[in-house]
Amino acid sequence: MTAKAASNVYSFQDYRSVPDQIHGIRPECLNPSPAPIIVDNGCFQTRAGWACGAGDACAPILQFRSVAARSRGAARGDTQIGNDIANMEPLRWLLKSQFDRNVVVNFDIQELMFDYVFMHLGIGTERRVQHPVVLTEAPCNPLHCRQMMSELLFECYGVPHVSYGVDSLFSFYYNNSRRGLPPQTTGLVISSGYHCSHILPVINGRFDARNCKRVNIGGSHAASYLQRLLQLKYPGHAATITLSRMEELLHEHSYIALDYQQELEKWRSAEFYEQEVHRMQLPFSAKVLGGPLSAEERQEKRAQQLRRLQEMNARRREEKLQQDQERLDKLLAELLEEGLFEQFHKSLVELNMDSAEELQSYICKLSLAVEHGRQRILQSEVSWVVISELEQPLDEADNNAEIDPDYNEDTDGEKAASIAQPTFNMAEYHQLFVGTERLRVPEIVFQPSFIGDEQMGLMETLQYVLDRYSLEQQEALVRNILLTGGNMLYPGMKQRVERELLAMRPFQSHFKVEMASKPALDAWCGACEWALQNAPGGSGWISRQDYEEKGGEYLSEHCSSNVFLPMRIAKPPPKTSEAAIAPAPVPTATDAPTAAAPVLAQM
Image 1 (tube, rainbow, N blue to C red):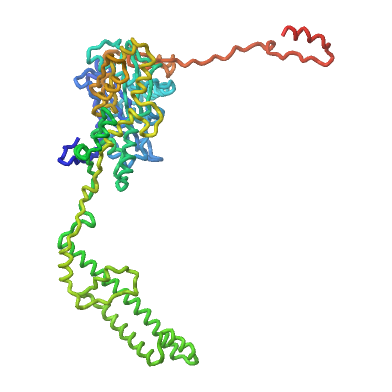
Image 2 (tube, one colour):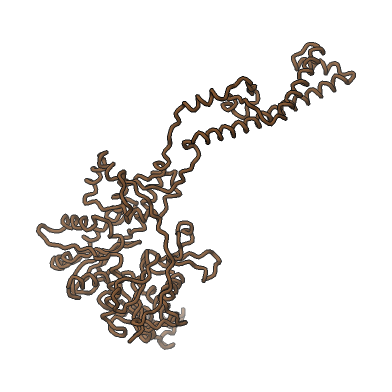
């Protein structure tokens, strides 16, 4: 978070990603056996690294956004992935992800992600990755998605072994080991990610997939909701209120209210509002039109206005004199022609004249005006101007005032300088006042109805899951509740869950809620620790032979994996002989009617 100023003004960091370098494979990752590659295939970020037992084992080498940008018709090599995209906003309409919610469905993009991971980890072998791979997947991942993923890894990359695990369960396994709990621990995992949230019960160290529940609310919904709120509040800055800035605003300036309604009542106070509101400064240019100008700038602007006014006056005079000249030529032509006395008198009436002498006088005046106007147009510099011309519309040709030669520019300049010009603070105009949005947006995890989603909130779903167990199992589950996932990083999340549990649990019952040590990274760290303790080829690993014999949907279960439910294919009924399926003879009209009576009786 940026340094807090006295007036709670913050600036957007507008983080720009730096392209990842291509790392080399360390010797300990090759000897005595190839080290496993750990890939946390997350909806928001992909994290990858080695499980080689080094000191920085709990720090992935690669961390990048799980998006790819490729223009229509572009070659495969022209695709930008993850950190290769410095600024995502101009390319947001081109961004593609391999996920539909939290399930991988676009395996063309997934293949590009694997290419990016293996290349930047330094694997240079062609058409073969000689390292085992540990990959995270969604809870209750569909068999078809696992089958396509296994086919991609075994057929395209030729990996020797693959292991699948649920990211939230890897985090649960990792935090239990850090607290000294045995692997066969009963507990409850509350995870919230970018697209959805989960309630995952664990009974005696194994995932109970039948009673887990998903809530389709995550960080992406919060960012979109915050963007919609601020764009409605500041329609003049709709283009600068981007999703990237809303994600930054969520991560660094939002919090979970312990009591939502009570917290809203606090915001009604003007003093509380001034203390807690965050003014987010949008980028702007200080050099704008209409701002306070110096004396030299005012003088230059006035000179430009004088030149423009001179040109407009000269152009209008020339147009008017040209019209007068045309009228004069027409009248002279009519006067010289013979036999047109009636038309000539009509013209005199139109001009409101009584005689030819008056017309001749009018012609002389027009000629002098034309000559005088031409001389004034040829003059390049003038020392006077009509201020009233600035106040008139440009198209009012009839109200053109003549320029006063006695006009004194110095006196008007003194009057203009003496008038105090209103000051306009451009910085304040480009500030977003984020008040109740700081707690209103994260609240959608507990109250999805804020965004019009008709489903249970996180704690209501938790109560529904607990009601499916006996009282003894409920006591065991609530004694070990873990909060994990990137969407759990809001300040006050643990206290809110404890308060909700205190309200829903029986009187004097005990429960314990723990926040993951690193909610966003514990899934990768748990997978790394599991790979170090379980050598490839043992329980939990799928070999190529298993893939060929048992199919791509096969899963070798372990403490952090899904439950494998094999697909049952109904066998076709056995074929019967032709005699058994031959149609019975149809009785004819010559048959005796009494022959059918015994048959009907038997039926």
